[in-house]
Length: 466
Ligand code: SF4
Image (cartoon, rainbow, N blue to C red; front, side):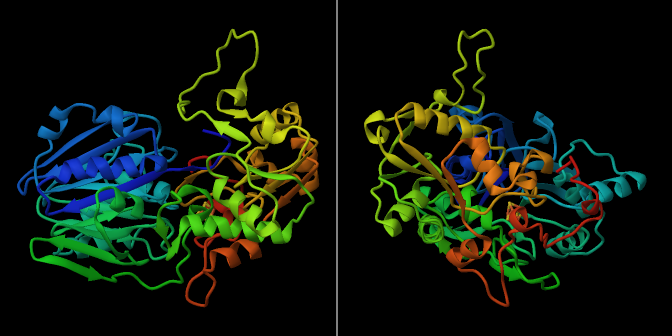
């Protein structure tokens, strides 16, 4: 809703439960924060796949009971989507479902492939006809051409061609397969409910349906679930995993556990570390709700400055809000946030948020806080400056739109009109997220420019496709 990076997708799957489609619907509800543009469910009754999908929120696309009557069976997969790789169009909604010479298959994908365009050109030259612009369809075409005998081998053969980020869930008439790319950019967890295996982007989806959390699906792991149970494979060449640190900063829900850590706790630790790195004399710490709340609590805790809710967010303003063109006044950010004057007036205020992308929203919020009577406004950001775009499944502006790519912290401070501005350091962020070891480190490319998977066009400028 605000000036943020946007997550692109959430996936869910369940195998062997009489209420498979209904539980998938609930799982997608819990994952709605990962994508609000479209959603869909594919179910299997053991003989046939059926699909319902549409543009909009889960509650809107699945608002009639009759929809579930058309999704029978004991297994289902689902998807919520926020698009960039692939336009805003119903035909790009997932799960993608196709019939091919070996039967039917559906797939739900979270992530982005960095070599999708090259693979697509190559496949088209060899006769493939694409019906969507989503890079996920590339995987389906590679799968249809794969020569191996078994489904896991065919999926491995197809995925050995692709580079990038993927947490995938496949469904055939009789099997479910979940795969996480060797770098493990996006989260994917495994759960269990009443004899059925469940996979989901985040544990908050397991919590909602009261499934037991078993473990995370490991980077490079493939899980096959069929009537004989669950089999795990590690079919890819091993690389050092690089899960996305931004999942901890902003994308994942704070009540989820991902990459071995509880997100809420990590966000509070970001705030504590931020207080250690950028102390300031102040009277009150306030978050930009909702995403800045845990870090602000951590900042207040470590600094000893009282925490207050100084801004209240209107939760009913959707992404589709359009500023009235003929309005007598520009309402802008006031539609979404309103200050509590009594908390702010006459105070030296520390404002905590998780990121600044373009800086335009931060500038408006600071103006609003000053208008509410703040004596000083000190902005503290619980991540380092975001200077580089993401190519691994997150919607980011182009590099020139990212204020940190071309402006120093002092210049940004002047632009957003804060008294002082402090960002968490990369070292502080990684320390707080505690995931540095020889075996595994976070992807921090949008802060450092160190992309764990390179691709040809990166040397020039940022490809608009991603
Ligand atoms: S570039 Fe940033 S947002 Fe993208 S995967 Fe890496 S850390 Fe996450």
